[in-house]
Image 1 (cartoon, helix red, strand yellow):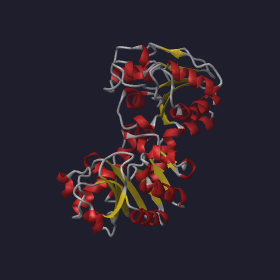
Image 2 (image 1 turned 30 degrees about the horizontal axis):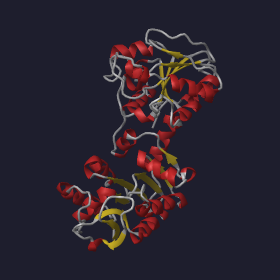
Image 3 (image 1 turned 30 degrees about the vertical axis):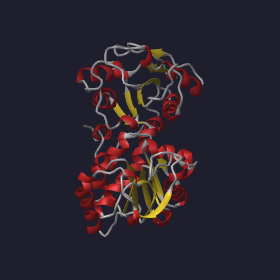
Image 4 (image 1 turned 45 degrees about the vertical axis):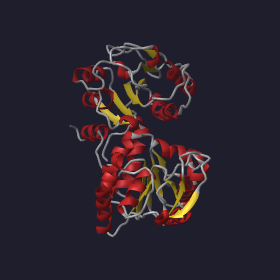
Length: 398
């Protein structure tokens, strides 16, 4: 993907004395007292900010936080806790500026935080007037927020149209490189794991991947629908019977290419959805009418682990069972460890996937962990994200 990168501008010395505007993703979780409970996104933004500062730039950083109402700023919408945490991580003051659209005072070597960008009227609708006004604040616009790359908003898309220079920060650049390596030019076999409660939420992803991957592993409620499509009983398990035809179409598309959707041969069932419910391992053909399927069985897990071990590239989105409950975590744990042990390049994304990676302590053994939820899913669907599209256009001189 041909884009201008902040790293190249920094290395060439062309950032010295320039006003650099960084759109980061600092939308971190907070408790009722306004304290940050998890700061991964703030820490992930630091390399891009430091890169600009060390290159002699005057740096402005902004982000959205929560779901504020445009034009109605409230105390709980404030980036103040984020600015404080960023100051600690950078080891220098990070003043927080409100009402910044009309002008920002910042010197070379300084960094200022611009208050919640989604409070500005016109932000979500990608207002051209607002985009032009904000673009006039900088010499260089930097998008370093993959988590919002699928949204065409004023600070994620419009500014990139009108700023003198528009580029990708190191976090966004890394996402682009990992996605390209996994999907555009993968080492084969390419194995994708797509799991979740409903086929309907990931049908377009499944359809897109069916045209490209060598093995499409499905899990959770999605796997139950595929089991139905294969003529297997699923008892009272979560499924979407009205999407059985679409599931069959995905399997047919894979089969036509000599690829496959492995269907579970054994499952772990319970009579109720609870952590203390007795777990029973059954052949997939023996599921009773009052059974809930809550995990893939050990034979299925081992067979899938073997496929992952032979993969050249692995894309992982979603746990294959109710991994939060000890009795129903074996499938997800087995696949997670297989990914960790594999020599394949692996890319993982989605909130539940990241929780599983953290639970099993395999962060350092996954090739790339995506920071974007919705953006990651749209990439899997084969969509070109608005943020990528405009940065590519600007790199071409458009």
